[in-house]
Image (cartoon, rainbow, N blue to C red; front, side, top):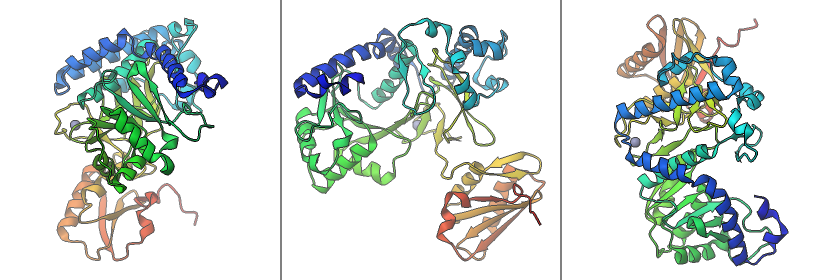
Length: 455
Ligand SMILES: [Zn+2]
């Protein structure tokens, strides 16, 4: 990024900035789009996402490879695993290994980096997170990660590098001092035009649309808020674009349905979401059926009983990431996806997982499970609250109805028994008031067991 803050770049005419930017990207992208990229992209294309056996086999193979590599190359993993990893043959065996807390991971990161990457003088660091120390990735790591993202785009019809790509991005490739003219730059080598997200605002929309009409991109990607702002302008002005993009890819964890519709109406194509916030995040991507899948070719995602997410990432050979407890909340959706892919479907919990209730015989039950119950009965009981005052019983309050129909009561109790066990009592009650504040995140469960009464 240094180049962009130099006076040379800032004071150059735009055509020269395009050349400087292209040159810089050429140097960078040789690391990203090397032979490893093409080889892996080819391999991914030949695999069958609907074949559970082969996908599982591949995942297990990659897992053993990563573990062996970590134990041999990283002094930290050598210390905690020793030489004996023979018991770990497949993803489900991972449970035998200790969970890695983020604090420990950060603290020991120098010992976690593998020797091979340490020996390299020029290490390519990637990080978009503020405080956590960056992972050091090898070029192969980087190339495989890029190939996975590009393969996802390819599944939706967009071939990166071959097709024209318009990317809405932050970054200071448009100097701050520039107040008019072109708020975009070309990276010729990548067939990509970068649009400044900072300039996706009212005075510039018309120029942006004209430029897009001129550029005629095949696909669009980048920051959802910038694309959304532009889409709103296009819809408000009832503009007809003279190009047709194949798909719009937005990198986000969550796009509201109305926002998706806004973008799809403006550009007349599907929006597909993907997410990989940092190098420590799972790679998730949306399928044709609109579900978010965790790509099991990139690692293993585990969900603990208390709602934590553990991530093992294969393409982190420079800084192996194994069973790291990550600061993200996802829950598994244990249903087959209509798209046919066997990669697990995940989604955001509708309520934060911060609390739990106690089962007499099964231990802690997080709000995640209760959120699932709530969602199941959303139609008939839109607002539920679970209150536990003793280890023997849990009260389920339904706001907005005074008398709970017998069938509903029975169905809810049945769900509760399934989660908490048969040795507890469940009382389902209705209450006529439906205070708005109760829909806040903290209201789903109240655990009075956690706070012993003082008197
Ligand atoms: Zn799917």
